Amino acid sequence: MTDDVRAVARGMYAAFNARNHDAAEDIFTADFYSHPLDMTGPDSVTRSWQRFHETFPEAQVIVEDMIVENDTVAVRTSVHGIPDQPEPTMLEIFRVRDGRIAELWGLSSLQRRP
Image (cartoon, rainbow, N blue to C red; front, side, top):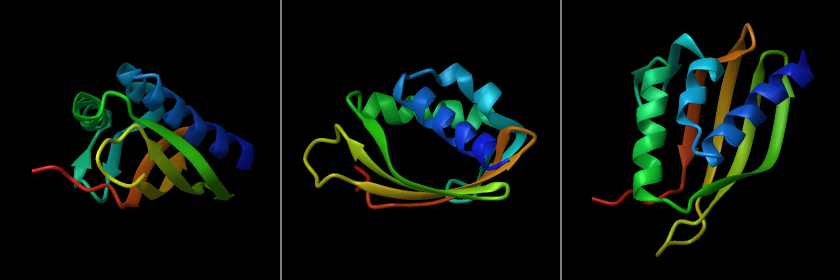
């Protein structure tokens, strides 16, 4: 199970970095919930990814550390390609159900633009 959960998380970052927004349908459960964004469903992820890539077209998320236990994965990442600020880091925790991400918690040092 650990390898499967790890593969789901890696697949999510690969899709994000490839700008494969449509992959959200296959990566996230229909009832996916993002705690930090208070959004539900894979469509919310698609919209979020699209907005992020429109704002930061050169952005790439690099996995620095990944810890997996049972159906949960914690990931520390760095974000490259964000101009005019120190390289942001993120900490995300995913719960995986039936091979898809069902729930997400996260913190980021990314400075949001007004």
